[in-house]
Image (cartoon, rainbow, N blue to C red; front, side, top):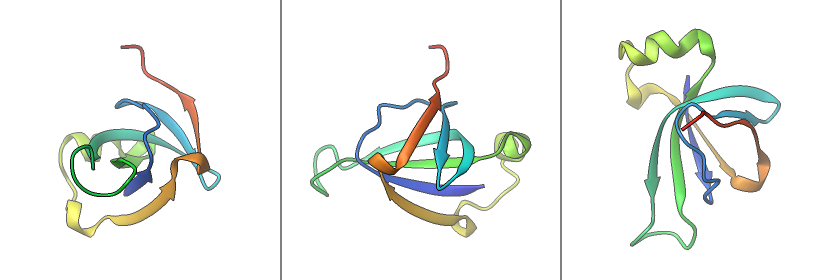
Length: 85
């Protein structure tokens, strides 16, 4: 599990499957930053991981401050699927 900072808005939702640097991950949570103040482009701060890590995320059996952080531009991400909303 890691924190993924996406520079730019992909318009994704929780549960979206993404491909980042050749790795397929699921977006467990999203926080949108920079709408009113901040960078010129909004940022999506996502907690992502594999399906095997979903239970760990849901039971909060991790420390958010100790997750690895990866920052990428929105153009470098492929959206594989979106959840049915």
